[in-house]
Length: 258
Ligand code: SF4
Ligand code: FES
Image 1 (cartoon, protein in one colour):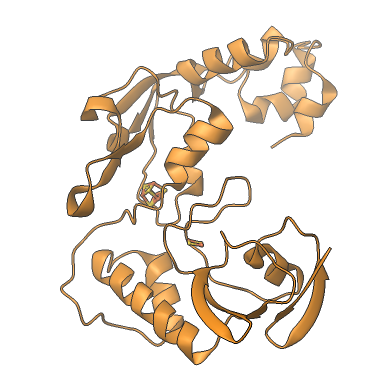
Image 2 (cartoon, protein in one colour):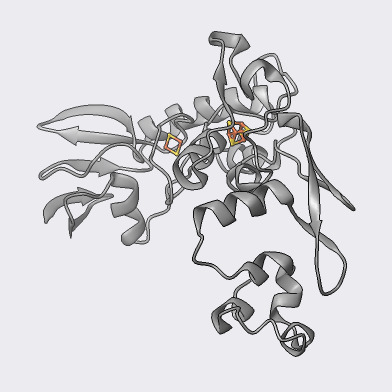
């Protein structure tokens, strides 16, 4: 255990926590954009910047990447923090003036209009999509290319990649809504990744549901799961109809999963 002070309150927390996690445990909310509890922290957006004081020496650092340490004092809302966080959000707002999550955070800091020249991007290059694809899905179909102002996230050679299974995990974690999933009957499209995949038809209701590539991937990964599971859409898996059609090999727990 480690003893430290966060916003004038002394606290004892597990030594493997970050400042962000320790503050959360105390009910102190630090704003974040590029942090997701299921993924390794990257410190990309800098929105979670806090002030850390150690032996009368004060620094600014990202709370999501900074481990708790004995004897430090953390200020999550000091004047120094507000100034730094305000500038970071102003820059993000200039890059993405039409992204709601950024507009909301900026507004909380009293910023309505950035002083800088605006762009019309949706991606803040936080890398959450890259990390979820690599660390959770285990596919690594997207990555960063270029440097500086031309840096972006894309597929290899910026064309359709056979590696992408169209699962949409990237869109789920994206904090800005930059990744759009378009389901058109038998096709799933993810325009940002040049992805276009056939969707499987449910054996029960006949509706198209998940991309065939995603189902094939899951089958390869979890071969102990019953074959029937992949023939039926999530809605029908829960329905009486599916049970009547004696998809008996599907464990009961799958009917209750969303
Ligand atoms: S697309 Fe979304 S998740 Fe990926 S880097 Fe851009 S903002 Fe982050
Ligand atoms: S949430 Fe910590 S740097 Fe983005």
